[in-house]
Length: 338
Ligand code: KG4
Ligand code: ZN
Image 1 (cartoon, protein in one colour):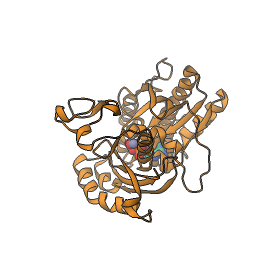
Image 2 (cartoon, helix red, strand yellow; image 1 turned 45 degrees about the vertical axis):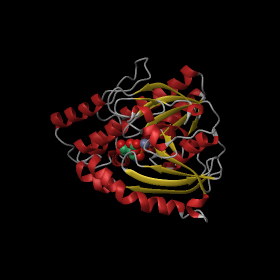
Image 3 (cartoon, rainbow, N blue to C red; image 1 turned 30 degrees about the horizontal axis):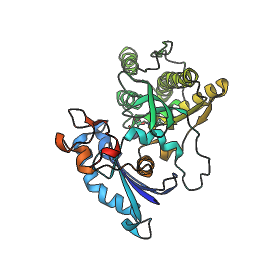
Image 4 (cartoon, rainbow, N blue to C red; image 1 turned 90 degrees about the vertical axis):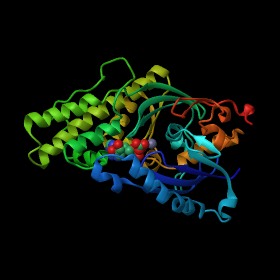
């Protein structure tokens, strides 16, 4: 097997990539819909579906153009959740993205096991990754995802969507101790997170003191908010490494782009003797290269999905255990494949 085509369209990015089973990224194409959703302050599913339909064929064509033989050179197809030869769980993609090898990047593969902090707009969780197909959930958010908290706080402050990058930029100019905000779950033993109260605290601060009067006050509020999120994320991630006796931490998801999180994680990891791996930005945010790679590993193990069976709502055609909404809970072993 030489090349796997990955296709990703689970949120607001339409993406396709060509990746080898050892993680070499030949091409990685991402069409973002951010501009379309920005006026609404978040992803609008109907708009997303229509934009995916428009973008998916050109994006796949652009990825496949990297292969001299075009589609004939593709040995496998991996698609996030929806039908394809291998249905890849979007989160598996994020957890393995650190293993991708991009042009000019000759970092060696990250050894297993590692603890992964996945913080994006839709998810915030800690995992122990022993192998690509051996992943254990250690803790997760009980309400909002970290990226969602950034987006909601930004919306409150009239900073537009997505909120993470703007708050990150403004926070660099502000005093993180200027506004006292809660550090949710920071002193609790659990590896779970909670971010909805933090958004409420920002809303209350604005109600009480009015919107930030000038650039300086805005930067202070952003820095204080970011400090709270980042403090808890980094603390729990390193605590997970200690609890699991795994001295290796990988960051993933869009929030891994955050300068404050990177700095705080680096500081704590150094203190505790934990090796920190932060993939390049392109690998942190939604992309199809991580989906292609996760799919390639499963294809290499001989796994195959029948597109119609795996995702069929017809019980007789299903292979595996499904929730009522049709999403897969547990895959039946490939040996029983029809
Ligand atoms: O992983 P991703 O591209 O998409 C999914 O949600 O799956 O993550 C997007 C999220 C958004 O909530 C965005 O605000 C956040 O990641 N984000 C950031 C930064 N860049 C993106 N959050 C904090 N700081 C950043 N620099
Ligand atoms: Zn994602």
